[in-house]
Image (cartoon, rainbow, N blue to C red; front, top):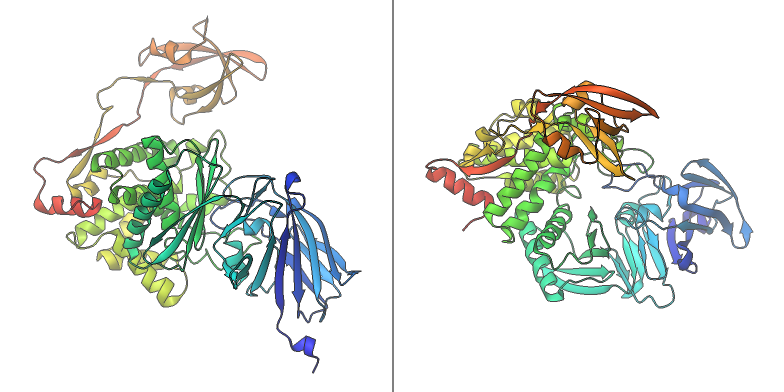
Length: 581
C-alpha cells in the first residue's frame, strides 16, 4: 500500500503581514494526504452571528497553488470556490492575499498598528473536509508582540495555534499587535480582556465590573462551558456593537465612553449581551445555526429568541449585577416597549418573519423599513419579558425564564447534542411553564396583534401608563435632514397625515402656506389637529403643492407604575424577576 495514500489528510496555515501598511495578510495554506486528483477550497460568504451575505471572496487576490516549485492548474468554479488540479497524494501549498480594511466586529482590518482577523474573511477551507484539524502559525509584523484569540496555543507557543475543525477556526477571531491585556477569573475559568486603541477606562474597575457581569450571566444556566474566554475590545473614536463567538467576543466601544456613567452602563450591557451568547446561540440554538453552510444563507424563524431574548437578558443581567436600580431598569424596558409600539412595521411584519428575512431586510434597511419591518432584537426582547411573566405566573413564582434556558441547554446541547426545531422550542416553553402557548405564538410571534401589556405585567404588580394619553400634539409624520440649507424628507411614517397626503422621501419641503420654511418643527408647532395646510415641495426638480390635513399624534410614551396594593405573590415575583434580596 502507498504510504502517502494511507496517511490522514493534514492542514496548516501560515499568516504573515509584510504589507500590513497596505492592509494585506498573506495566507499560505498547506494540505497533504488528499487522495483525489482535484479538490476545491472555499471562502465563506458570511460570518455566523451576522446574517448577511458579505462576499468575503471579493477581497482575495493572487490565488495560486503549488507542489514544491511546480505551479498547479487552478480554476475558479464559483464566486467563492477554487478548484485545484493534480493534487493526488501531493503536498499542496496554496497561497493568496486578503485585503482587510474594514474595522467592524464582523470583518477584518489590518494596518501597521494591529491586525484584527475574523476567520470567515481570511481562512479558506477544503470543501467536504471542514472537520479537519489545523495548525495556524502567525508571523507578526515588525514590533507586534501580542496575540489574543480563543484558540489554544501549541506547546506554549502563542504564535502557533490549534483548531479542532474549521467551524472553530471560523469562530475564533484574532487580535494581533500591542493590545493591553487584563485578566480575571469567573467560575474557575480564566478570562482575558484584550484592549486595542486606548481610552479612559480604569483597569481595575473594568476587571471588577466584567467579572460581576460574567458571574451573573453564568448563574443563569449554572454551568460555564469554556476552558478560557477572550474579550477583544476595540476602543474606537465612535461607534459600537459586538459579535459573539464560541469562547470569545469582539466588541467596539467609543474610547472615551468609559468615564460617563450612562454610556459605561450601556457598555456593560453590551458585554452582557455578547457574553450571554455563550449559552444562547453558541450552545442553545435553533437547529439551522450549526453546523453552518458557509456558501448560502442559513434560515431560521427563531432569531427573535436567539437575539431577542439575549437582548432581554443584557440589561436584565446588568440590573441583577447591581448596575441599574430597579427603577432605572424599568425606564429602559419602557423605552424599549415605546420603540416597538411606535414603529408602524410592528403591525405589518410578524417577528418570526423578521427573523427569517434578516438576510434580506434587517441588514439592508431603506426609507420604508420603519413602516414595513420590525427588529427581531427589539420585539424579541419584549417577548422575553412576556414569557418571563407567564412562567412566573403559571409556576406561582417558582420558575422564570432562567429555567427555560437551563432546560434547553440540558435537553438539546448536552442531551441531544444539537439545536432545536421551532416546534421543539415551543414544546420546551410549554413544558417549563406548564401551560399551552398556542395563543401566545399565534398572536405575538407569528402574528401582529396588539399586546395587552398590563395583563402580563400584573404578574409582578406593575402596569404601563401612557404619558401621552391626554396630550393633543400635532404629528406631521416626516423625518428630515438639512442638506445645505434644504429640508429634505428622508422617510415618511405609515398612516401619518403626510403619508396619506402623498409626501415622499427625497422631497424637499420648501414652504408651508406660501411661507418659506427653515424650521419645519416650528411651523408645525403653530398648528393644531384638523388644520389644513398647503405644503410646497420640489420633487425631481419640479415644484408642486400638496394639501395636508394635520392630525393628532398617536405615539405612546409608556412609563411603569406599581398597581395599587400589590399582593404578596406579586411582590415575590417582582423580587425574583429583578433579583431583589
